[in-house]
Image 1 (cartoon, rainbow, N blue to C red):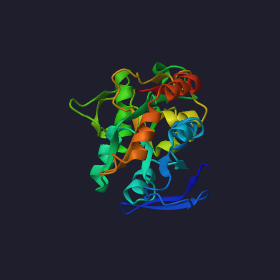
Image 2: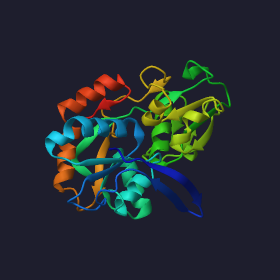
Image 3: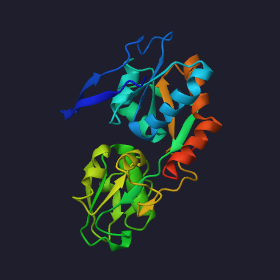
Image 4: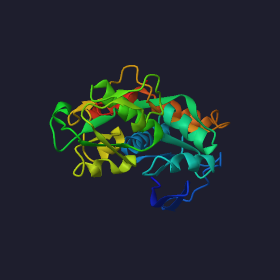
Length: 277
């Protein structure tokens, strides 16, 4: 049975993130118990759905006892792994994890051969049908976490709306915009809030999983979306350093990169999520 953890509070104050979690479901074993089920944290869409598919269709035959806990933010899955509340997580890309570890002193690492999928970042709007229709002074909402904000700005730059300073990498912010011919205003929001912001802004750059939850398709609804080829933002299975060779983790990594999962992703998401293996 899926064990769903809901975020009850998320307060950022004086640089410290305070999170309250309420969990329901199975109490079987503990997250750090290597003889118990493999407890994996994931954001609901598509990671939770992909893990559910594995749990219901592949895990039992492979001898894997898999338990999924869902979180709706991009912070708790890593802190939960670091603190041993869960054994692994599946929700993030490498630039985000590198930045998270650097800022938080954590040592969460990707599982070898555990990259599963890419969620193309897209620009969405209820006000215009094309990017070129954005008016002077338009407000564009972007994710406020470091790497996804840089990723969003790069998408806007790649499509001619802005130019970024030369040499800016995965930490670009609106301060690194060198040219802004439309005088765009950037509204920085938590990634999960971006779909709800669409009525209040002229456009929003939304992460693929949150777009899907809001029934937005990068393939059909986005004004522009990231290309999959050569994209460094594939999502992978991750664990605390030293746990990469846990037999259960290796087994799950193999299942997540199986032909069955590749077909599931292609059939279910129709290009809104693409397999990265």
